[in-house]
Image (cartoon, rainbow, N blue to C red):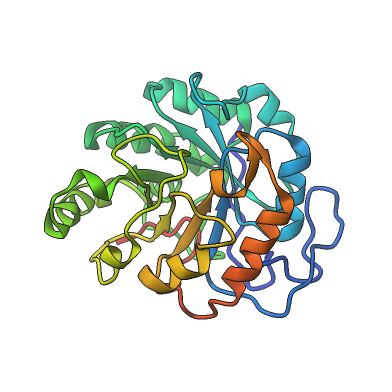
Length: 287
């Protein structure tokens, strides 16, 4: 089974808040709102078809599926393969797997991207990018997943654009130390996910958003950590991320998404307007 191709990030793709006319898994129109923002929205910890379909209808850009046995949001790759996720990009979250296991799960679950959420080191990232680069050219025929038709520099660039790496600012005593970690990882990943705490995720804690303002980050990054309709606008205005990663803050129980909370969060994000960071295309990982 081949990897699915990434859809180019065209202006008429589903918007952050469910632009009228956006179609999801069932082809039904998404909820209409009056504004659209450049922010990218990921809803992680999806476990049910109905939640995935609703997120797609609302215009969520990325759907996250967690493959970690001890997580209450753990899912089986075969079940994910059967899910219809509309136009959302499918992201697998990996914690303890080997490179071979990540690649195999991506194939089985029909994933577009891999998110490394277990502190995997540079060597792991390099090995995974190399493994994906051996497969991607025959799928994408040399086209960049982020450019809407522009040729990528190499298969390595295409593969790197499919990789997200979670990082934890709280592990660092200073901003300079954190920036050094980002700089070391950046040549081997396409995006970062800034999460709260010092490991793991989905526990509801938030980051000190003001401390991230002005951070020098060489890749587009998503803000995670306890985000929901009550705080996501404040978070975005404080630190200007490229996107947000919603999980526990939009649930009624672990793995059970609350669609009203998601819709309210999207409305709050639309109110941010241009409060997000510099625009970047999904999958853009080139230097």
